[in-house]
Structures are given as C-alpha cells and as structure tokens.
Length: 160
Image (cartoon, rainbow, N blue to C red; front, side, top):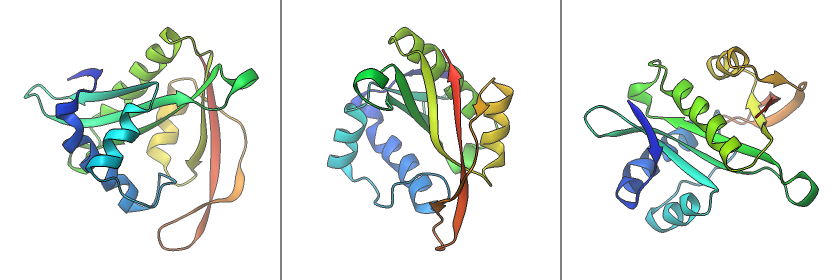
C-alpha cells in the first residue's frame, strides 16, 4: 500500500469512494454526491489530494487537505478521509492520516483541525486520539445524520 498524490486517471474511483461516504450520511457534511465535472473541480481545488493505492494499483482510499480558514488563521488546515467500504478495517485510514500530517507540515501548515467528527464515529475518534489529536470539546447536535437525527460532533486538533 502506498499513499501518493492523485492523478486524473484516479478521479472516477475517487468520486465513487467519496460518494459512498456522502450517501451513507453519517460522516461527511456534504449531502450532494459528486459527478465527473464537480468531482474534478473539487479534488483539484484542494491544497493536496492524496490517494491510497493498493499493491495491485487500485485506489482504495483518499484524503483532501486545505486551509481551515483564511488570513490570520490560514496556518490551520483541515482534512477529510474516505476509504472504500469493502476495504475498511485494514488500517488504510491510519496511513492516510499519517501522510496528511506530513504533507500538511511540508505545505507550511502548523495545525490540523477537524471541525466535525461525529461522536458515534468511534473508529475515527480512536485513531485520531492514538495519533495524538486532542479533542476540543463537544458541540451538541452539531451534525444532522442521514435519518434526520442530530448527533454531537467532536472537534479535534493536532500540532504539525
């Protein structure tokens, strides 16, 4: 497994993986799936987009990295991760997060902040905490789940 910057030839698979998470409605704030045009625009607009490539050359996960804010807070970045559902539980997310931390630092960011980690996303939360992320608190009812319920979100940060 290697983590590398995405290429145009990865887009179709990336869009499929991203949309899978969007359609599950339990982790990403987006509600609209990407199509070929919006996906190409979305991934190219990031500061960095990385993919996890399996030994057979197939893309099985990805992350996006971009500023969390502007100006005086522009040194703080934000990221999102997606792993193909059939490949989850194999530590691909951990590889993506570790690469993201290194790339964020290389790009000159000083802090990686997650604004909206859903409280019930225990696998992601345990991973972040194991990698040294610090939870900032809890925002009650900050995330609308796909079924219409509101769930708490837990912001996290990591100094790069």
